[in-house]
Length: 359
Image (cartoon, rainbow, N blue to C red; front, top):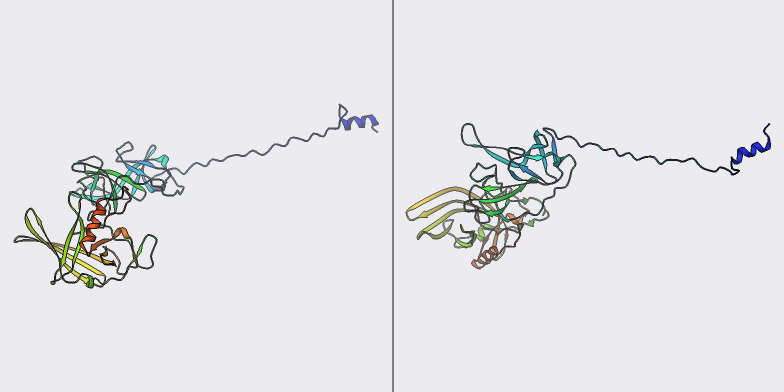
């Protein structure tokens, strides 16, 4: 049996106090696990994670543009820290073995650190330069060389105007390519027009509802319409076109002191207008061109007939206003449009004047 003073000693400890200290409990450690991103490999589909430079032909080649965050590319070759990727929506002209030029997908080098598999929203900064539209050009990295891409229909930016060439930029698929056009770009709109954006049902955001227009009542015999056009110097002018009793659309002007008559055969049915030709008469000489420009009338008021060119649809419920052409029904309305076009908004994204283009 333990003696009473030994029991007390065990309870109070060596210093005569009760020991109430709790054992130390350490908080669990948080271990951060870092998962390495998937490696960039040949054939892999990647997403551009941040804006990156694109280079031509080799990893340290000429800078030809940039890929924006969110662009999707496919890797076709690796070289150290650089990847050769297929540039979306652009093609490159190359010399064919048997002569001539053929088109192949455009490829460019990009730093692999800009590539990943995480989806990121497409982020594009505001474009710079003057906006023009629908010019077909081969664009070169160095003036005098075969172009490394051909411009697409739609908008592009004029960055610098040279004596014989123009420095341009064009965007598509989340990339922007920059180079020198093979010929000088003059004016605001070329003939390489995209099919007009139209809807067959409803009115999508940014579109305008189409109205029912009977063009045979508008483009009747002896009626004159006025086209807004551009001169070689970029000035906006109005041309008068007269509907003849024989079913032609005719303009009479002068060039180099000589009378020049231009005739289109015009077909009108419902909202559809087709221009065939033109035939150009200079003195006793006549030159004919086998073009056919197809339009759909989508709006009409006292001063304007609004048409959608090259629409790939018979039924149109709505149209995009940037894809229209206007035939003015009064000379004053056309001249007012020319004045507005001559003083555009100082913005690369400003709407373009509805000038006539085509054959």
